[in-house]
Every structure is written in C-alpha cells, then in structure tokens.
Length: 211
Image (cartoon, rainbow, N blue to C red; front, side, top):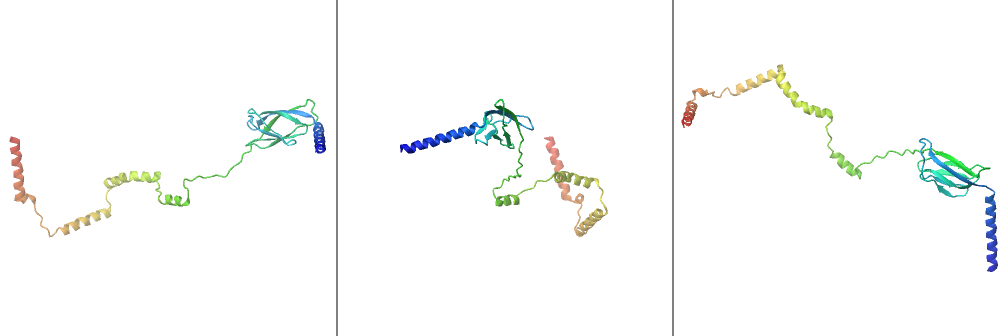
C-alpha cells in the first residue's frame, strides 16, 4: 500500500512539473481593455470574455472594462446578448508584458416573425363573436342619415310637383268624389240643432261674464 502511494505521488509530481514547463514556454501578459459599440461608441457592460486556450471565462464591469492574466498567443472570445461575437488574439513577443485593446462590437439584430395576438381562445369563440358582430356605420353612412330628413323636407316644400304627382293627386280627388257621390251632403248653416247649440253657448257665456 505504501509503495502504491509513493508511485502515485511521483506520477502526480511529474505531471505538475510537465504542465508548469509547458505553460512556462509562453509568457504571461496582463490583458486589459474596454468594449464599445461600433455604431454608437457607447460602452457595452458585462461582456463575457472566454480564453479559448485555457477555457477560463471572465466578465467586464458595468463600464465595459476588463483586465485579467493571459498567455501570449491566447485567443479571447468576446460575447454579449444582442452583439456579434468577436475574437481577439494576444500577440507574441510583447516587451512590456501587458496588452491593452479597445474592442468594438457590432450589434446583431434578429428580425422575428410578426405575431398577431387575438382575443379569442378558440376558433369557436371567434365564429360566435363574428356572427353576432355589429358593424358600425362609416362616415358616409352617418352623413347620409343626418341629412336624409332635411333633404326630404326641402324636396317636399321647395320642389314643385311634376306631371306624375299632379296626375296622381287628381286621380285621388276624383276617386274621393266618386266615392261620396251618393252620400247626402248637409250644410251646417241649415242645421237647427247646430244653431240652438251655438245660441246656448253664447247665452251661457254672457251669464258667466255678468257673475
């Protein structure tokens, strides 16, 4: 058991030393910068930066600023919602061991299909409401209703009768005359009862004035 633990310790130490030697071949660089919108020149906050060489991910602050350690030759992928992804490669043989960039990202506009929202939950509800729907009058129909009576009165009193109307009125008068031909026409001036009622009303009116 002790021998097995010793072998595992030696193997792990060798792997750690190998990884350190491999990473030591590349110089460490302080990678810093600010992310801007290429169209509006305004900062883009909280952009995600992923080092594709090491797999580590970082994030810019609310002012679009970032700063972290990378190696020469690393590829940094910048991504943000609503923007196209941008890749920045850290150059090699940097003298000052720091690399500062001004990254400009372009907005990625996605056109979604038009969605129409209807107030009916099912096709049956739509059919029922459609069959009972009352359509409102348009401006033309409303104007016709408003001026219809005025126009009719104007035509009745202001426009003279034509030949057809005169003929119709004459025909109606002749028809009434023929219908009343055999009826006795009485003259109210020759009716004694009418005269008695008239005189009575006059006498009663005089008495009421005297009182």
